[in-house]
Image (cartoon, rainbow, N blue to C red; front, side):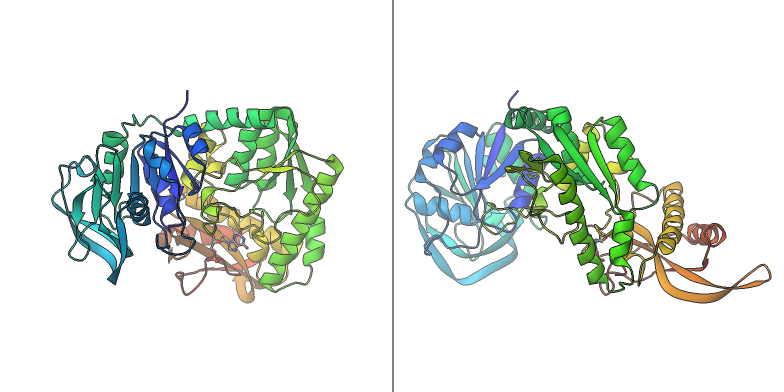
Length: 511
Ligand code: XMP
């Protein structure tokens, strides 16, 4: 079955991801494509509706992004947002002008609620406006359906041609009930049914990968993180043993994590898995290194070297699988290029791996959609909902230089902390929590003995974007239990402290 599709023409606006997201939240599949996608390709995709995004350019500016006018003749409903509305007006013979003053912020917008687009709205609504240009003269056949005090044409439409334009941004939370406008467009104007669910994505994606790759060979670097895991399982369902996964275990993973990854991929999914136990190699390179950025660099580079060596043994492959997800896709060139996701955000692509093409099966998915796909594919929940774990792993949680003994101490302490957080049912509300082995030793007393041992710091943060966050107010009895277990069960730790700093000013990691 072919899904109904909403095509989102990307004119470079900062909220474009959100538009795609909102459409999918309404259970209609959406795809973001470059603004200059050819009319043939658009017809081929046969969308139920098209959305023009906003963008920073001016339609009258030199080299401003434009699509072909033929798009308006397809009979497909189009919603132009901000720049998208201005472009629609300009191409159809209206006039777009620079306003004397930039309008930015949540504005009272008066609308004509008899319009299909505004069904169910009051006459006045709060929507986010962010523009300098505005449509001064409407193209022929259009009528005004909305205005603000300073923008006479905040909404326009030509119902006969099913063309709609809004100067404001319905996709952002600042616009009250903004999603309802998108819903109205999808269901009242494009007549979508809204039957897209993530399982259709998974099945379709497997089918597409089968067609694309056929009986050729693909190679995937598996990190144990959610993205590469889901990408690997999709590929394996599509091409089976023609996929090889290389899992570089740098020895800096959490307790038992390497074995868990191996168990899932080798045994549960029967994937061709090469696990490289490279701990010694990494520790050797890291010996005596205390500077956090140097640690990151060394690990990133070494990871690539190990991956390359293994890949070389396999010889040429046709496809290299990358777990790039939608938020990784660079917005720069109007959605045309994507960041190559390195597994440690440092090294980039391996230089010498012999492949012809990259496949990125998740490049259109948001993180929560990747997770849902993972569950759909049968990947264990604890892996799919795993908290973020930095590429350099425990290396940046052992403060100062790294030794095998220090790693063992940290793994044990961290495992106790995670176990108790899960026992208390807090693992879903605290977004990231871990132990840090500080390089501080202090005096303690155990029985009659004086001790001089390490201090473990516990870190737990609540955040939505990991750019800012607050320290988690874990109940004292839980902290007490964690502390008591760590000093009793982990050798060489005699003190536990709790980090009560938010981000900013502190970062989440200690290094
Ligand atoms: P900070 O410490 O900067 O961390 O507040 C924000 C988020 O990024 C993760 N992090 C990393 N992830 N490589 C990664 O893949 C790194 O070098 C790295 N450093 C920090 C951190 O765990 C948190 O989720």
